[in-house]
Length: 269
Image (cartoon, rainbow, N blue to C red; front, side, top):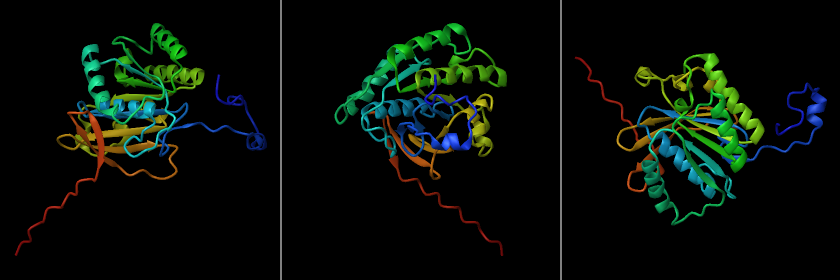
């Protein structure tokens, strides 16, 4: 099932332009995320990607802005599948995050968390289980953190990664769900210049598949740089953002970028 009954059917230009369309709902402004679209957030190990994803989840269900981008003010429901850290530590993270947010926020739409350390989306059992919970909870957004944990095949092989993409596309089409994947960079390449979305771990399939690709870089201490490698549906180019992470509240705040003053070169006489 798709949002349009004509998807998959050849049509003339007149047929397409004569249709009355219901355009997808905006979930995160700036062209970052629409209904039934795909987003990838990636960065090096310990670059606070998961904290960024959790902050995004809470922003979407409460209808609050996310790092300066509007979300649906009526809220959007989220199913957050985390596969990496232990349940007690994840619960502690949630408790700390919500303790400061609840002072100014109200959860408007369901926010459901799911911890599963062994689910694989290139295996039939994993696909069936994900399909079951999407059918049960009907979320607007599925957040999957991290990507590598749902893969049993080779991350660098196109055929293996195409199976993951096909499984996710099936879920998107069937459940009209948007998907946000949290992923990593290729090992070591961050020190070898600007690779853009080619720095994303795994086959090129993922960067080609996603509508939005957001790169997270640690700038020293608790300061992060966010770079928009791909924003396919943005009407204008998005500038990078700098964010500070508060370890006491797990809060993320947009700040003015640090100004790097070029070093003076001494002249020889």
